[in-house]
Every structure is written in C-alpha cells, then in structure tokens.
Amino acid sequence: MRFVWLVLALEIVVGVVGFALHLTANLGGPGGMWENFLYGAPIFSPLLFPNLALLAGIAVWVLTESSDEPGFRPHLRREEARRSKHIHMRADELLPLTLRM
Image (cartoon, rainbow, N blue to C red):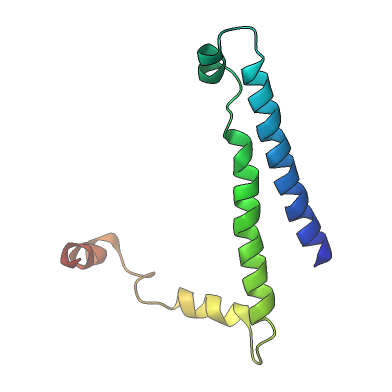
C-alpha cells in the first residue's frame, strides 16, 4: 500500500513541476505574453495529474478504511449493483423514469 501512496505523491509532484515549467515557458517565450499563453504550453494541463491523484487517494483511503469493517466483501457490492433493476432496463423502459424527474 505504501507503493500506491508513493506513486500518487510522485504524480502530484510531476503535476506541480509541469505547471511551473509551463508557466515559465509561457512567461519567457519568444512571442508576446498573450500569444505565449494562447498558443504556447497549456498552463493548466499539468494540474490534471494532482487532481487525479487526489481523487485516487480518496478512493484508496475509502477502500482501506472500509476493508477493516467485518464482513467487507466488495465483490458482493458489485453483484448487488448488477442485480439492480435499473441496470437491466431497456431504453424505452427508462424513458418514463426520466420524464418523471
């Protein structure tokens, strides 16, 4: 489990460093500042990595916390979801449900 947290931390570091590199590339680029930000390196793209790492960290944390509960079996939860009546409905059966909302 430490490896998972290490990978997520590394992903956050890579995203922040990428943001800094894109920012410096746009600030010191050959064109004007507006052209650099408009046509240059996308400044917010590297921040997707920390965002996804945060979401994955929440998911890993929830799984590790709930796995300590007695009787925790995630495969049973998947089976219950498969047996849900809305999953096996056809599109024409779902239409009246969506119109009622």
